[in-house]
Image 1 (cartoon, one colour):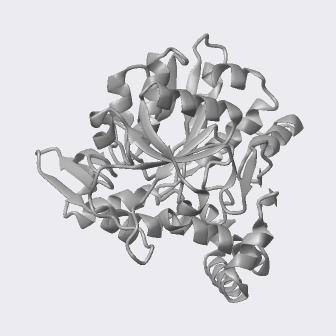
Image 2 (image 1 turned 180 degrees about the vertical axis):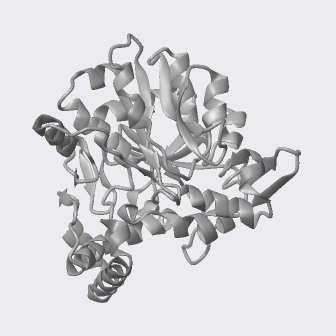
Length: 376
C-alpha cells in the first residue's frame, strides 16, 4: 500500500497477479461487492440485521472520558482481555512517526486500550497485518471499519484460519475515510504547522471531545468536533466512501456508534457531556458477548428502540436513502458501480423520494464527470 500526494492509501502492484490471486481478491475485496444477508432475527431497511439495540457507556470513568463516544467499545475490548476470551486486540492507532497518520496496533493491556481509545479519522489498513498472524497461537479481537470487517468475513470463507485467530469482529459506524490532507488542514486551522506536531488526537477526552494537537515546543491547540469534522474532515472523504452501502458495520458481531443527544427539533447536538454509545449486536455470538459484558459490569446499557437511531445518526440515514441515486449518477457518468445485494437500495430510495434521488444522481454525475480521472 502506498500513500498518494493527498494522503490516501492505494494499492500498488509489485508483480503480475495470476488468475487464482485475482479471483481471491475479487472474492474478498468489500469494495467490489457488499451484501446484506443476515441470520439475525430482526431486520430494518436502514440499519440492517440485528439482535439487540442499546445505548450505554463504559462503567470505567477513565475509559468513558478518554474514548470517543462513551467508551463502550474500549470497555468491551478491555473486558475481553481481562476475561481471557482473547489474547490481544488488533486495531488502529496513531503513528508515532507521524501523529496525524494511522498504523495497526496490537493491544494486550489496559494501558494499550486507553492509548488506542478515541476515533482516528484517516486512512488505515488493519487487514494488512492479518496474514502474518494466521499461524500464531494467539486469539485476537479485530476492530476495523465496516469495510475492513466485511473483508475479513469474506477472507474467512476461503481461509478457515481467520475465524480461529480472529474469532471476534467488532466495528463502528463510519461516515467515510478522509485523506491525511484533511488532518493537516485541521492542524493548520488550529494555527499550527503539521510538520511540527508531536501529538494529535481527533477526538476523545469528553464527548464529543475536541481535536487537539501539541507541537514539539509544547504549545497546544484544539478545535471543536463541529469545526474539525463538520467543517474540514468531512470535505476530504474519498468518493468511494460516499457510495458505500455499509457504513454501519453489517458484518460485525457488535457495532458501536455515537448515540448523539438531540434537540427539540430532533437534530443532533454536540455540546460537551458524558459520553454515550449506541450498541447493535448483529450475530448471535455478538449478542451473547454484549449480554455478558453488561452482566459482568463492563458496560452499563439499556434497550433502545430501533427508531431512535435515525435522529442520532442523520448522516447515515441520508446516505443510505440517497445511495441508489448516487449509484445512478456514476452510471450516467459512464463509471462502474459495486455489486450490492440485499441492501434495501430501492426501499430506501422510495423513502427518500423521487426528487432527492434525482438530485443525488445529478450531483454525483456532475462531480464524476468533473474529476473522472481521480475516480477511475
